[in-house]
Length: 488
Length: 87
Image (tube, rainbow over all chains, first blue to last red; front, side, top):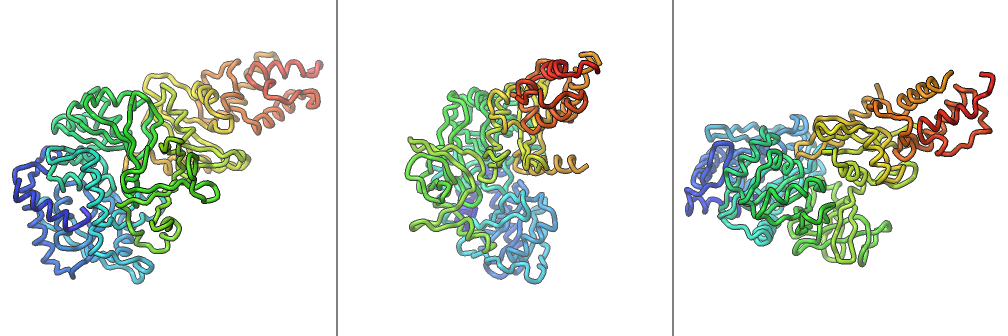
């Protein structure tokens, strides 16, 4: 999406194949012809605003055909769109808009028009922030922002083109494919399952965010629209599988966003009898950087595999020296798709670093590289905590808990403890009717974990864990709730 | 105090101190409190201090190792073995 080139390609599909379906949204099917009509009308609305060439506007990323058309219209007009989460609070939205020097807040109305609210930033709101260059980027995404204000990440037009080329070749995509697009539109996953598919003239099933946790609805969409490509976090697969459906039209299944639990992996394979399975690793700053062809029968945990074509990866040891061969350390990647840097300039020095003739992004992830060159994600660098002086990986503890057959999901957080310094707390959802107790779970943990890594408190519930807008367990919220309880 | 009372008191103490907010219905006398991480090394110190205080045990005579505190039954046995005869 990141460029006017993409918008022109989509417009050309509208001319050559007006009746082909571009978007499915609930009961609505939007053809390329209609998508382009909609885009044209929105362009007319845009020109009435008399924006200076190369302006930046803010388009909250509602997952609707209207928003897709509005983003295309903005690109065709040569402007840049900041596309934050539509769930962002108004204060955070104002802050972001100020930082990106946004002129108007735009939304597509039901009847194909535009609402435009001029943005009046506070003085100095954009101090220290680079002005987006409309010649290089059409789209500004934001990182998820679980800590403070989201960071604005310009997506390079050339980077998107290279990414779409790679994805098309890697998955053998054509205009006959249909993607199930589950992630929010402001998420970098949409660069593949929405924008790459539209560039191809293929179809996209936009999952309505309001119904994103409705298992029957989701499975119905995948079956009814005969989707061929599915990409998402484990929760999406859990939902798709909930009613025992099988999806024989799917050719490619992409796991991404977080580690696939072994128990789920075993159930996914029979539900997609004709699919190839891939574990893909990436982030907003670099887009995808690793891919691994998965054999579900081998079980988990899945490696993230090897750097994708054109990507270079460094694994730094504790002294910051790149490992020459196998070992464990922090992962740095340089992809052909990556951003040139956050708009906020002072963030860049810490995470973007030049090695040789390439700029690398510090992922903050700890990986282990095997002698064969396969990479395994060990967790976030900041997910290693010291419990009684022993370095402990919270994700490893989570994985051991999740491996219990009666556990559906588990989150482990570290909490300050007056005596021990840090103590671990586990929040666990047990399988309904399993009768699992925390003592029985602790016995399981005792068998598989060193003593210090067994959480000091283990809370079992029958309900799902709270989630972030991207469907991952909301670790911060769980942690805050624990802190509140211990304060009370 | 009978050994049933002692067992009840120790079980209640372990549940309140180390398993607050957790379901302890299946905390049996032979449940391994050490391997399951319910009682860690800091917990051992607190437990020792508790039983020596409540049951007036001679601290010097007690072997301070995890095996003496591994289960509620073991703790009860430890208390009974070391209780002053007059109490």
